[in-house]
Length: 140
Image (tube, rainbow, N blue to C red; front, side):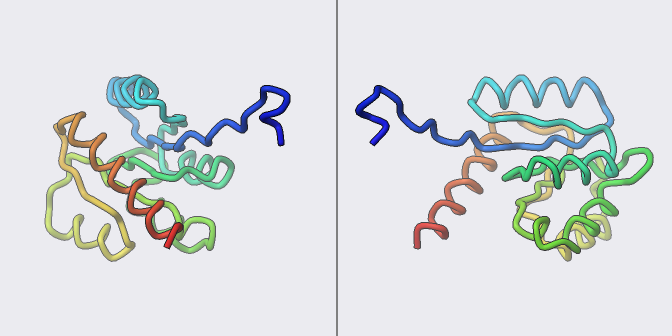
Protein backbone atom coordinates (compact mmCIF):
# COMPACT_ATOMS: atom_id res chain seq x y z
CA UNK A 1 0.00 0.00 0.00
CA UNK A 2 2.71 2.49 0.97
CA UNK A 3 4.68 1.49 -2.14
CA UNK A 4 2.26 3.64 -4.13
CA UNK A 5 3.58 6.75 -2.38
CA UNK A 6 7.20 5.69 -2.67
CA UNK A 7 7.39 4.67 0.97
CA UNK A 8 8.62 1.30 2.06
CA UNK A 9 8.55 0.01 5.56
CA UNK A 10 12.16 -0.13 6.71
CA UNK A 11 13.23 -3.48 8.03
CA UNK A 12 14.04 -3.45 11.70
CA UNK A 13 17.71 -3.43 12.55
CA UNK A 14 18.89 -6.10 14.94
CA UNK A 15 19.36 -4.56 18.38
CA UNK A 16 22.48 -5.44 20.35
CA UNK A 17 23.15 -4.37 23.93
CA UNK A 18 26.81 -4.30 24.99
CA UNK A 19 27.24 -4.46 28.78
CA UNK A 20 30.87 -3.98 29.79
CA UNK A 21 32.78 -1.58 32.05
CA UNK A 22 35.84 -1.35 29.78
CA UNK A 23 35.34 1.75 27.57
CA UNK A 24 37.77 0.55 24.87
CA UNK A 25 35.94 -2.75 24.44
CA UNK A 26 32.54 -1.05 24.42
CA UNK A 27 33.62 1.48 21.78
CA UNK A 28 35.28 -1.15 19.60
CA UNK A 29 32.21 -3.38 19.71
CA UNK A 30 29.85 -0.45 19.14
CA UNK A 31 31.81 0.76 16.11
CA UNK A 32 32.14 -2.68 14.56
CA UNK A 33 28.51 -3.63 15.15
CA UNK A 34 27.22 -0.34 13.75
CA UNK A 35 29.45 -0.83 10.67
CA UNK A 36 27.58 -4.12 10.20
CA UNK A 37 24.18 -2.40 10.42
CA UNK A 38 23.24 -3.31 14.00
CA UNK A 39 21.51 -0.88 16.33
CA UNK A 40 23.72 -0.74 19.42
CA UNK A 41 22.99 0.23 23.01
CA UNK A 42 25.57 0.22 25.78
CA UNK A 43 25.68 -0.08 29.55
CA UNK A 44 28.60 0.06 31.98
CA UNK A 45 27.33 -2.40 34.62
CA UNK A 46 24.66 -5.02 35.17
CA UNK A 47 22.15 -2.69 36.82
CA UNK A 48 22.33 -0.26 33.92
CA UNK A 49 22.27 -3.19 31.49
CA UNK A 50 19.11 -4.63 33.03
CA UNK A 51 17.35 -1.27 32.79
CA UNK A 52 18.46 -0.76 29.19
CA UNK A 53 17.40 -4.30 28.26
CA UNK A 54 13.90 -3.66 29.61
CA UNK A 55 13.62 -0.30 27.83
CA UNK A 56 15.13 -1.29 24.44
CA UNK A 57 14.24 -5.01 24.09
CA UNK A 58 17.51 -6.02 22.41
CA UNK A 59 17.74 -9.15 20.30
CA UNK A 60 21.20 -9.99 21.66
CA UNK A 61 23.16 -8.97 24.76
CA UNK A 62 26.96 -9.13 24.87
CA UNK A 63 27.60 -9.42 28.59
CA UNK A 64 30.80 -9.13 30.61
CA UNK A 65 31.01 -10.85 34.00
CA UNK A 66 33.33 -8.66 36.07
CA UNK A 67 31.71 -5.23 36.49
CA UNK A 68 30.96 -2.82 39.33
CA UNK A 69 27.54 -2.37 40.95
CA UNK A 70 26.07 -5.60 39.48
CA UNK A 71 28.14 -8.28 37.79
CA UNK A 72 27.13 -10.11 34.64
CA UNK A 73 25.99 -13.28 36.39
CA UNK A 74 23.63 -11.36 38.66
CA UNK A 75 22.29 -9.37 35.71
CA UNK A 76 21.72 -12.54 33.72
CA UNK A 77 19.89 -14.23 36.59
CA UNK A 78 17.67 -11.18 37.11
CA UNK A 79 17.06 -10.85 33.36
CA UNK A 80 15.80 -14.45 33.18
CA UNK A 81 13.28 -13.81 35.99
CA UNK A 82 11.21 -11.63 33.64
CA UNK A 83 9.12 -12.86 30.73
CA UNK A 84 10.58 -10.11 28.52
CA UNK A 85 14.11 -11.16 29.51
CA UNK A 86 13.71 -14.86 28.77
CA UNK A 87 13.51 -14.18 25.03
CA UNK A 88 16.78 -12.24 24.75
CA UNK A 89 19.82 -14.12 23.44
CA UNK A 90 22.91 -13.62 25.60
CA UNK A 91 26.56 -14.12 24.75
CA UNK A 92 28.89 -13.89 27.73
CA UNK A 93 32.03 -12.02 26.66
CA UNK A 94 34.47 -12.16 29.53
CA UNK A 95 37.97 -12.85 30.83
CA UNK A 96 36.52 -15.32 33.36
CA UNK A 97 37.30 -18.82 32.14
CA UNK A 98 36.67 -20.87 35.28
CA UNK A 99 34.35 -23.87 34.88
CA UNK A 100 31.99 -22.64 37.62
CA UNK A 101 31.51 -19.30 35.80
CA UNK A 102 30.70 -21.06 32.53
CA UNK A 103 28.34 -23.51 34.28
CA UNK A 104 26.52 -20.68 36.09
CA UNK A 105 26.01 -18.79 32.83
CA UNK A 106 24.88 -21.90 30.93
CA UNK A 107 22.34 -22.66 33.67
CA UNK A 108 20.67 -19.35 32.77
CA UNK A 109 20.35 -20.28 29.11
CA UNK A 110 23.08 -18.34 27.34
CA UNK A 111 23.78 -18.77 23.64
CA UNK A 112 27.57 -18.76 23.94
CA UNK A 113 30.47 -18.06 26.30
CA UNK A 114 33.44 -16.28 24.72
CA UNK A 115 36.71 -15.70 26.56
CA UNK A 116 38.56 -12.38 26.13
CA UNK A 117 40.59 -11.59 24.13
CA UNK A 118 38.25 -12.52 21.30
CA UNK A 119 38.14 -12.37 17.51
CA UNK A 120 35.70 -9.70 16.29
CA UNK A 121 34.90 -11.55 13.07
CA UNK A 122 34.08 -14.70 15.00
CA UNK A 123 31.85 -12.74 17.37
CA UNK A 124 29.97 -11.14 14.46
CA UNK A 125 29.48 -14.58 12.92
CA UNK A 126 28.06 -15.92 16.19
CA UNK A 127 25.63 -12.99 16.44
CA UNK A 128 24.52 -13.53 12.85
CA UNK A 129 23.99 -17.24 13.53
CA UNK A 130 21.79 -16.41 16.52
CA UNK A 131 19.70 -14.03 14.42
CA UNK A 132 19.35 -16.59 11.61
CA UNK A 133 18.25 -19.31 14.06
CA UNK A 134 15.71 -16.90 15.51
CA UNK A 135 14.30 -16.11 12.08
CA UNK A 136 14.08 -19.82 11.26
CA UNK A 137 12.15 -20.63 14.46
CA UNK A 138 9.81 -17.66 14.06
CA UNK A 139 9.15 -18.59 10.44
CA UNK A 140 8.57 -22.27 11.28
